[in-house]
Length: 156
Image (cartoon, rainbow, N blue to C red; front, side):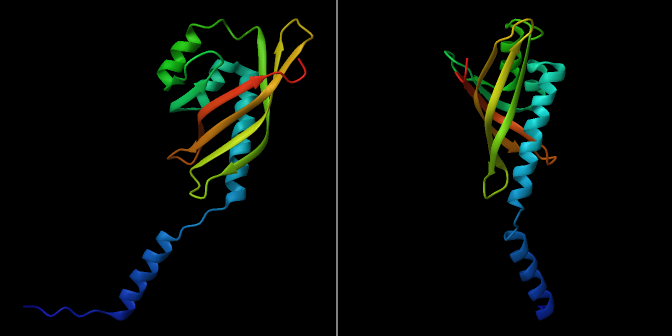
């Protein structure tokens, strides 16, 4: 039988490495900034290319939309089907402004909330409301929303 010799320096190094791997921290402020930036880019995309394309670009494959008087619309394929059955979004512009973001201690989930603004082309009245989006960090480091909902009634 062979005798195994343990090198204390290697054992200390391995122990330190395992401790560091289990004690990973992240920059919460940076993560909140990433989510705010993503949410603003999401709104800019809605303004430039339309609300439907923006939502499909920024939603997680397992994302959920909560709409008034409807059951939750779950998963991207059902959301695509829902959008295909709704009128064109070329007659209005939907934008929003995130006012706050927070991220979980694990760094993989977060949320934003803020105000949305709907301008109907050819109309002077603006519709306004509030929203919340829950975001999930993707494997590539980007953020996509996993749940989005809003309500109307601000200054209409």
